Length: 113
Image (cartoon, rainbow, N blue to C red):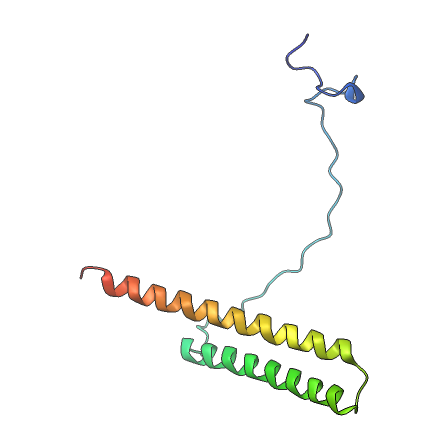
């Protein structure tokens, strides 16, 4: 038995070192960070404010859609459920980001100067 031979009997006649043509993949879009090389003006606090505002908007939208379904103004129950799930996931993400930030802050405070 040849130790470098094919393992599967279906691969008889196929060398394990033969070149396999990879399928051509579509070209990925390029990301342009700007030509000026300027530092973003948005600060970390503003980014967190945007995150909280986004979560609040999703929760408000979910509440409005659910209220419409409960009052009989809309029959789009699936849209209401999807909106509630999106709001729940975005809230969970925000909580996890907060937990990581607190953990990082505590780790920095434990470091010796």
